[in-house]
Image (cartoon, rainbow, N blue to C red; front, side):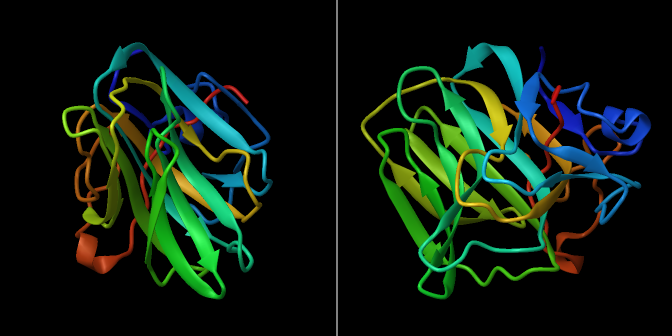
Length: 216
C-alpha cells in the first residue's frame, strides 16, 4: 500500500462510503455525521481501545502522521492519551501523547527506547488542532507538532524503521473526533493540500494531524 495515505477529505472513502475501507485495520472507531473539520463526516474515538491503522507495507526510515483532532473530553488528572502511534519494526513505537499533569495539559512524545518528554500546551475541548507526529531515522528523533510547529522532540540511541500508522491506542479514554488524515514518509504540515483536503491558512485555526481510516 503506497504513501502518502489520506482520508477524510472530499471524495475520500470516509466521505463517500462513510466507512474505514481505505484503512488496513482497527477496532471500535466509528464514522459519524457530526463535527467534521472538512466535508460532512469525521471519525470518533471514544474508548481507551478504539483505533484505526494503515499499513504501508515496505518499511520506511522516516514516518509521519498528521490529522485534525477535536477533543470533546480530555484525560483526567494524572492520565495520558495516545493520539498517534507509528508502528516500529524493532523497538518501542514512537507516539504523540496528550497528558493531564495535575490539571496542566501537556503534549509529549515517546521515543523508540520507551522514554518520554512533555511540554505544557493549553489543549481545550471544542477546538480543532492540527497535530503531527514524525520520526526521522537519521537523527533517531521523534517530534510532535501543533499547527506545523515543533513543540517537543526526543532522541534516543535506537535506529528503527516504520511500517504503519495508528490513530488511537490502548490508553486512558478521552473522546476525540479525527478528520483529514494524512500519512507520509516526510513532513506534511497543516497548510498542504493532499488528496483534495485541507488548504486553509494555519493562522485561522488550530489544526490536528490528518489521517485515513482502516477496516474497523
